[in-house]
Length: 281
Ligand code: RP5
Ligand code: MG
Ligand code: MG
Image (cartoon, rainbow, N blue to C red; front, side, top):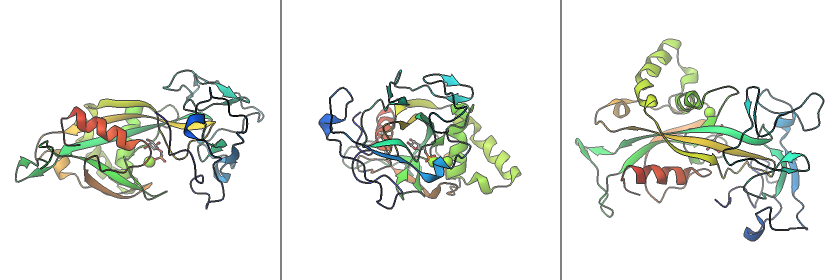
């Protein structure tokens, strides 16, 4: 995958003050010499302030990360294989981005996320809805609108230190698409119980690098995307009450087709899911 969304223009959420230095398509790969390359150095102020989820700067007292390894509770292993280094910093395995430093990402190297793709068939009067042109049934997925940039996306999120990916998948879905953070503990246990069967039956769709607009030369997003599908008409997903929460400002059931324009590499994951189910794309 040639990254596009983490090249060109300005770094996200910098009020157009932090331009990415230009990287032409044929100079993305580190194996192609690019002596004039002078990427902008940028790590967001809120990351430099040192929140719990962020690494200290490389070279800081007491910071002895173990790269390419599970470092205590922090997973610094890339799904893409062993990463190399650029002046002592992990180097983006998909090439140049025009920015050095961590940007808005907390970790040097891979920043691990998980993406739950929750799907159901579009139904009308008890029948699957068939697309006129492709003659294939239409699949729908739970889609959120991100608060940070207004783009539609899978309700994914970061894997907390030591957290199992299976837990992250369900937790992020519950926070962003069901607004768990504002439920009573009773409501939460009831909903968790209802979702248990669905989330036990997931299928891995993708693991690896994400073309995320926050990526830099030294910090990048990786994810594990799972599909959780409910094929029974009138079953759980046809009754579920969606409520946007946490870093989502809206949530909806989105019909799947090639026309989708989604955040980062999410369109690719949705295409894989549609094809696996023989759905319209
Ligand atoms: C994307 O960023 C991943 O695919 C995942 O959807 C998301 C995780 O970051 P936050 O939603 O926590 O910002 O690269
Ligand atoms: Mg989240
Ligand atoms: Mg999120």
